[in-house]
Length: 319
Image (cartoon, rainbow, N blue to C red; front, side, top):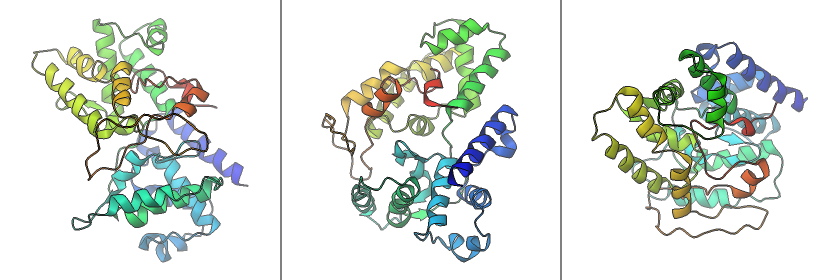
């Protein structure tokens, strides 16, 4: 029965993208995801008012799988890679007087035994570390990282908008983005449609970091991205050129690889892996970012150098 539930959620997501019904299918708030998952998993709606609306998520099977479902829809949970901390942090606001929430949250996550392999239980216990230790739940809409399927459709839409041949998309999927007018406008189109870029404000560094799945130390990521973007803004550029210079050139794979090399931190894993200690200590008001998961990405055939916006994400999605 559980397998059928997962398949149904996946099927509905696929239909939403294929039918271009973003306004009806996109879930961006915690409450929306909660209600959707209660319906999809056949949980009694009474539990919303009696428990979930008052922030109680007990350790029964329905509640554990409900939390996993919410995490999947809001994309702060992945059954293979676990908790996406940069994503879930959007939903919690620490109290101003609380100066130990980071240490409590980190201690809680580190105490999760690797022997807990059930995906619902592991998602539930990981979630509770934030839900009980990090801060107050925020109900506003937040940025939902784009899936491989969504990125595919956005890329195809942008290709069609500008009437570019299919061989262009093949070229982009191989990581080649020449500095020409067509590619510049393609980059801008992808940035606009993903919500990761606007002509007025340029790249949205907060969202880009989330989309990157915490690929590097957050402080270093922000510092270097901000520096690169600022350098490009000194020039008077067309809209397409400005997007290409700031969105592609500041966030292409070699830039992200540089961020990862500078401050790679250890990732808890049942497999012994070699890690590199950070050269710069993160400030006390930030959780240490998870390192690039080399073992997992090598298993998938994904380069550790991430082309987070433009490179094809086909290899991250399995039908």
